[in-house]
Length: 405
Image 1 (cartoon, rainbow, N blue to C red):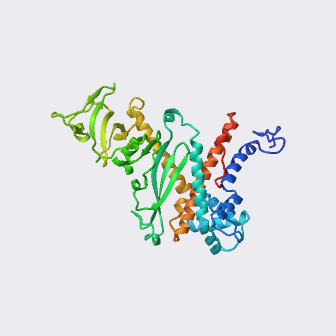
Image 2: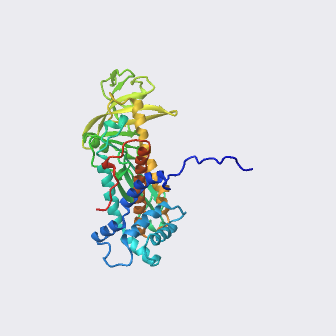
Image 3: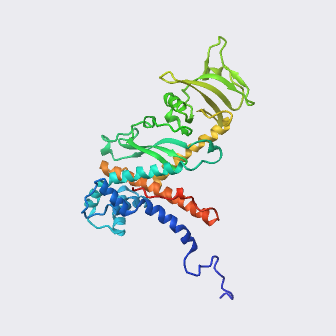
């Protein structure tokens, strides 16, 4: 049966035949992709770093672009990753010189890709300094979250990159910046290197650092507090600091001393019932590092899902209640999502079959560059959506600038 009246389309096409949504989003996508993967700029960087000679068969810029773009494809093993890169390389104008020549030239691109990665991360951190965090985070210069992520490697690399639970592992130690929405630094090590050993920063005054139990260190905590940073971490069960005072729900302060006037540690004070009887605890504690430097910090206890969770922090009591401290710690999940994107979204988890250390470094660096490109695309599309909804155009400082000098 034919309809008497043909229905009109839900969204009529543009009179010119172009899609207005495509026209809106295309400039942001182009600026992000070309900003990072401009083949001619990459080629100039390769020549500046003397990674290649002027007369050559392969094009450095096209090959690096292909390596990065291959991170967005999803076959199940790393050999497919290299074949994908070679296929993309040919599709975008590169020559077909065989896989052996392709791999050899790709390995020469490692210093070029590492330079691109460092420059882009520095640019993002510099751009982020001109912005402000919102809400309760506005009081901080930034929120920085250190964490590490391990990747299984071929056992043949066990002598080069030994692991803990695996014969061979690669570990990436990253410091994630909430302002920049990406890592401000990444350090690769063998998997056997502990997370805590991979994090001794140059402290940023006014920034909030959040880390998990793996980074427990009195020396690091005291160092950061004296440098003017704000610190927040989970408290290990075996950490038993000296208690100076307990604070009730109404802010009343109670000094903690035993019957002899001596100071008491946390476990003894809890066992003796010397702290305020409250669902949440808020305590002053004293920390002393190996250099005999002292700082006064807070220990708060916030019941969560039937479990008492203790936090050690320097956040001021006048501004942040124990509940606020527990909520702020949840921001640490940002770095977990960041690593999740690296592992699955840009194929970082496909390195377990690599046997050549340089090939491993090339693939990992390409995945990290792909992660930055994904971040740039996300930010660019968010700006485009704001424009679509009538918001102001993004400021000039938010433009995606080329990573190559």
